[in-house]
Length: 246
Image (cartoon, rainbow, N blue to C red; front, side, top):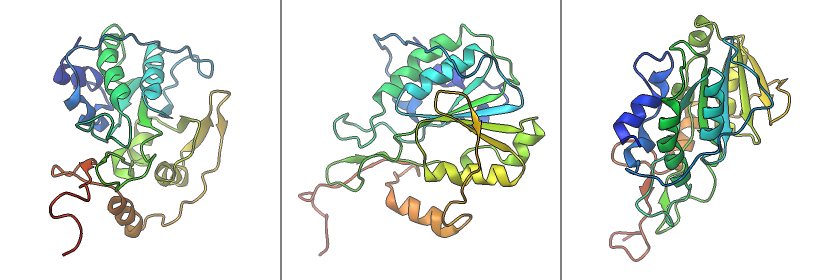
């Protein structure tokens, strides 16, 4: 079992082309030991790594990690983009991330058994539950988060590295991801969608407030930031001193 720093370096090794986009947030809360086993799924929708195709895995909780490991087995580089912190209490967290943390921890051991090329195409991992639930609830730990265009490679960078397609593996739709995919499509990258069956090309609908500072401001204002600038913070209880007006 790897420690948090060692586990992060396994998921984001220095020589990996896409490691610079990996988020270290959940690795900070990684336990020293997890008595669980991972059941890495078989993939019916893809047979081998395509060096012209990047994948975005947007599945709930640890399902994204498991699918990322399955993609690693066929030659992809899984890149964890999880950006919501683990709260001090499991019951108080709005977005459950315990299973993601454990899967990343155990998954680091799995990755050491795989020979992934430094220039392997990326599989970016997201939690489709990242904006689920209601925030700003007194006594809750608001660890909801979103992904912005700056969190992923630009279309120009992808194309420079030979990426011509972006395949989204998901069972849901999220506005924050649409802001990224619409940019990709407008700059010449083909977007495909896969819900577990055969991937199909799609046209991305232009999201509201596209390229507007109002969009980013409104999203951030609806979430809770911590002192370090990341997503995640305790919402004061109504009985706490200093809560409210006056």
